[in-house]
Image 1 (tube, rainbow, N blue to C red):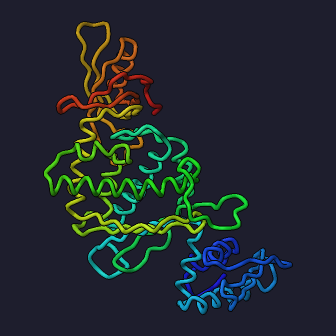
Image 2 (image 1 turned 180 degrees about the horizontal axis):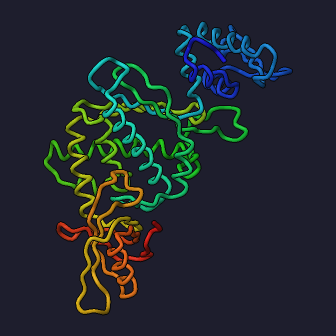
Image 3 (image 1 turned 90 degrees about the horizontal axis):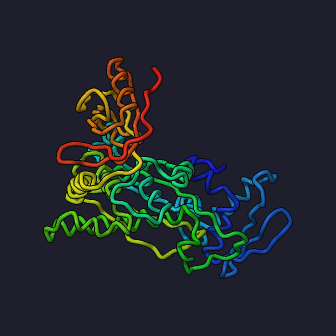
Length: 380
């Protein structure tokens, strides 16, 4: 591993596959040789040998020579070359916040909120990319494809320049790929990671555009609802509004696209404090208007009511929605058939915790669970 340039970037840039992607993107020509590949610059002025395996004797010396030669050939400093190689097979998002205090640091409370919102931002777009069905409020139970994808995403080291969070989304090259094609494949043929990255960029751009309409033209929540097909939803709005960590400063978002799947460069996006205020309010309104399917509520029975001593009855529990990012305590009303109502009565008397699933909606100031089912008492 190369030393002196930061463990993360240096270890990533020492990988022969990433180096080969980078050399290909710069027009170097490969020629197989025993133990590796000899690469010649397009001008013929420079050549480097890239070993096939890190286990090869003298591997680190070869890699040092590759990186120093590239820095000389491109007239750039070594650190710039290392950082660019390290992200050659990943889409990288740079989220720049502006907290008070020294550059490269952030207050812990603001930092926790920013990172939680960063996670929600990526997850919301992974859910959008995994389904053709677009919803104004995403279900609490996330698709398996989105959850599996989240396990592949990596946080990179934070950077100075205020406080910059970095996210690495792996984007593998085509099987057997020997050259980098400039033309993009149809979305359905792109790896899932690239589709999520595209969603991150496009949905954020659309959400900012919608907020601009609200601010400059005085329009309402319809500016966001008409963009649901572009990935704009309550989950995305909440995430974008929270990236600043509670400060009133703008957030800059830059997108670096993997060399393994080249695309046209995109401009940075800016989420201002005015945007955040609009998106936060819009998320609340969208949630208030939109029933959420397949919700599980866990809590304590706090009220029971029915007409007569038999038949169905109304139940109210104070609890939380499972998998809800906000983890808010709610009072939820629903109607149970006679047998389940009896179980709810016993749970109320014992102070036991219960679970129920259904579609969560608002009726006036009440949260109502429609089509309740799978009602049971949790073990003590």
